[in-house]
Length: 207
Image 1 (tube, rainbow, N blue to C red):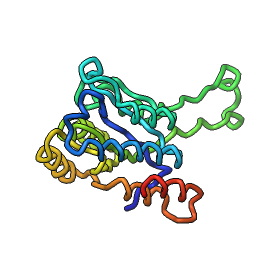
Image 2 (image 1 turned 180 degrees about the vertical axis):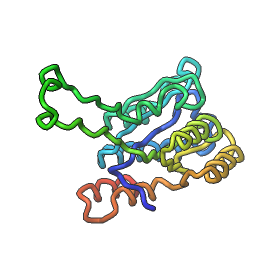
Image 3 (image 1 turned 60 degrees about the vertical axis):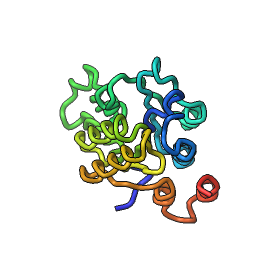
C-alpha cells in the first residue's frame, strides 16, 4: 500500500519555540517538518498544525509556522496531549452537508425532486509528525487510529528529548497499526512518477 496524495492530510504536532531546543536531533527534525509542509503545498495536500499550551511552550517555531501558512494551513491550539481530544478529528473530517431544499422543493412530486447530495468522504490518510514523539505525537496518532483514520508517522520528522523515548514511541505506534515512513518516502509516494508536474520542485526540496 502506497501513500496517495489525493487522500492525504498532513498534521505537524507541536514544533514549539520553547520545546525544540531540548529535542534530540532538533535541527534535522525541524528541517524535515518544513520540507513536508512545502511538499504538501506543491501537491495540494491539506496541512494542519497543533500547538500545546502555547502560553507555556510558546508558538510554533517561525519556519514551521511560515510553511504551514504558505500551504494555507491552520494551527489548532490545545491543552490536551492528544489533539483529537481538543477537536482535531473534527477538522480532518469535512462536515456532512445536509440537502438544502426549500418549501417549494419539498412540495414537488418525488419524481421531480433532486436527489440529496452524497456526503463528502474527505481524506482518510493522515501523514503525521511532531514532538514529543512519546507524548503528544503518540497520543494524537493512537486516537486517530481509534477514529479509523490511516496513520503514517514520518519518523525523521519526529523526536523527543531522549532517543530512548522517541524509539519507544515508534515501537508502540507500529504495534498499533501505524505505518512508519521517512520524509523522502512520503515525497516519492505522493509523486508516484518522475512525470509529475511538481517532480522537479519536490526533488529540489528533498536533495
